[in-house]
Amino acid sequence: MSTERTATLTVDGKTVEFPVMTGTHGPDVIDIRTLGGKTGLFTYDSGFLSTASCKSNITFIDGDKGELLYRGYPIEQLAEKCNFLEVAYLLKNGELPNAGQKADFETTIKRHTMLHDQMTKFYSGFRRDAHPMAVMVGVVGALSAFYHEALDFSDAEHRSISINRLIAKLPTIVAMAYKYNKGEPFMYPRNDLDYTANFMHMMFGTPCEKYEPNPVLVRALDVIFTLHADHEQNASTSTVRLAGSSGANPFACISAGIACLWGPAHGGANEACLNMLEEIGDVSRVNEYIARAKDKNDSFKLMGFGHRVYKNFDPRATLMRKVCNEVLAELGLENDRLFKLAMELEKIALEDEYFVEKKLYPNVDFYSGIVQKALGIPTSMFTCIFALARTVGWITQWEEMITDPEYKIGRPRQLYTGAARRDVPAIAQRP
Ligand code: SDX
Image 1 (cartoon, rainbow, N blue to C red):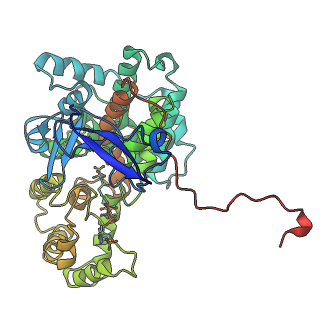
Image 2: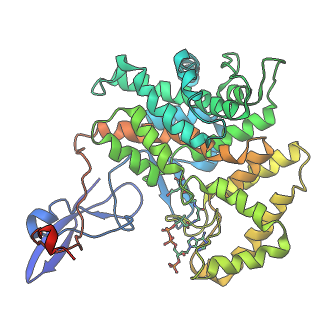
Image 3: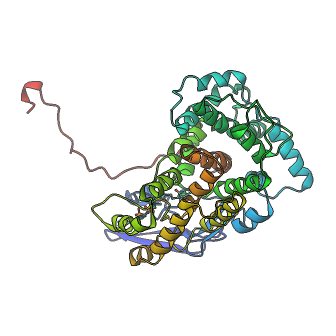
């Protein structure tokens, strides 16, 4: 990272200079950490439209080129040539594993897939019809009530154990939330299956008969995990970093990330998108909803469309559409009503001047609901799947933050627009 250039700010006749930092890829940034001290002024950037909140070596997005890199590798190549655990190893360690490292990592993760048996009792505290994301927020946060022996995060070994536990246990936790909702018995992990096949076994298997996951569907879900693994400083990752900056334990931080991801503007969009497609119901009604999305007086937004960073296309949406095609073909659902409706909606929206002018394109959530529904995953579980995969990115970003020598507790200021200072009146004088 270089800082030869400077930016000059002149306010009230006073001129101050700030270094301009250049990274490997992407826009340069103005280092304004001394702005308050030099000028008494703060910047204002609600929603962080023009703010780099940290330095990071993990993931890079080029919104104009539609490019997503994990540790420098394009998402298209990772989705084709690696499985999710290899990608998890890459995000966590910065390099892809060789054959020996891959085998060791797989074995380590397999050794942590079970939950403390007492945690199964947490589920019975929830209503059967509780949203599974509510269950996940609770159960993942509760992990910190069970793993006291590795909570010293200045110790790299403790961090590694906690990271491996989270990567290993999230599939079990998600599958248990699904089983609890259905009223079916929990399925224990099977160490003879790989990561994603084991997850499908825990989701769809029963004690009554042997469940052999379809390898085409396993591969499809594994790619979906890879596509969701990390994505720079999105809302939920920023939540995890901010929670972690106070020294909170990683389980609590991931629980905070899950809570943030749940929102329909973020990870909840895949569930909202499928519900929207069901509501539209038929191609004949697409234009009615396109009109609503364009209507300033209507709060309706086309779920699965638009992105803060991608202003041409979300490479994950392109890959997700391919996975969707493969799964529907494998299941003989090529004429799936919702898939055809989604493709028609995408075609119409991409030709509409409003969407073109505002650079609104399908994002990762647009097709993910359709393919997950075809895989037998219920709509309410879609964001749980997203959270399962994004846990790898969240926990990697958490570790990068707490091991950064420059890291401080995150504490933004504000522009105060409330009442001016005033004295408390006696109650008799209050209007
Ligand atoms: C994810 O940040 C990440 O990386 C997130 C994510 C990840 O991997 O972590 O990629 C995952 O969250 C994907 C996004 C999923 N959300 C949705 O699909 C919900 C629908 N999309 C919108 O809510 C919206 O596009 C956002 C939240 C995704 C982005 O919002 P921004 O960047 O704040 O943009 P904006 O809301 O200011 O929109 C700009 C304009 C606005 O119109 P004007 O005020 O300029 O007139 O575009 C309009 C918006 O009204 N607009 C839409 C729209 N999205 C934006 N209009 C109709 N339908 C939409 N979907």
